[in-house]
Length: 281
Ligand code: SAM
Image (cartoon, rainbow, N blue to C red; front, side, top):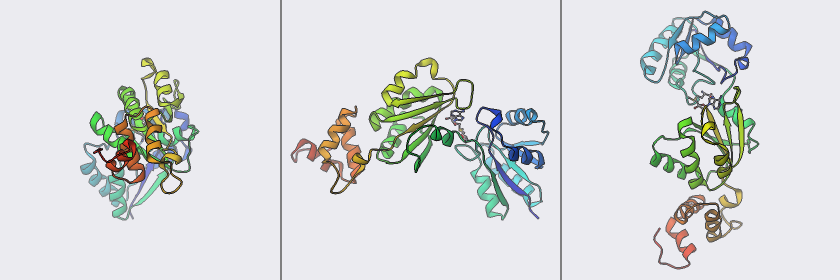
């Protein structure tokens, strides 16, 4: 009979956030597959566990997945962990999970911390539905293009961001989304945890250079109902463009945004804004 693949969440900072079930499983499996064996060894040792580890990361995913599947088919149980939080969430793992499921191996999730949901729970922004984007592209042009693509999303949006890019990301966010309400959760569950709330420009002003250290989740309110509305009760496109310009978007960005929100050609929105047929956005 095959072994079981356990997908085990570990803390995102505070070690008290490990669950009893995670500890039991980590102690019972034959091997723990992890991103960084030294880091996971420190965690296991802290809890008095001596289970062997094997590295499983983005550079050896496919070869290691095949090896681990063979061990699972041989009856060994494996725990998959990442450096912190829930494996597979902006972390390696989904290939192993997919291949295990395809091979008929039981996959059992052991839930625990994930930075996205933890930040969202303290954000005070709408949580009935949300879009998890994870990391934006590191190249500015690609980042801006991705932000433009999702500017009209009405649900709350959750991003991960690296400390050396948080300043640039907030700048691009303001340009693409306008001065919306956001919540930046920094170093959650750690000593320097802070949750900064306000419009993009207010949060940018609060996050001075020395607070650009650590790990960040950026939670952003969705496009407003009014802005995203389409059909009879939508405000005229011209007014919506003016509203976005007042929030800090350039005219062209505002036109693009309204076109996207309403599923209209940019040219049509531009014409409505300038009030004649001459525009070609
Ligand atoms: N799998 C992890 C999870 O479930 O949250 C996420 C791994 S991803 C490689 C790491 C990113 O998660 C960080 O760059 C940061 O954006 C976010 N993150 C992780 N721990 C965090 C913390 N304690 N506070 C704020 N953000 C955190």
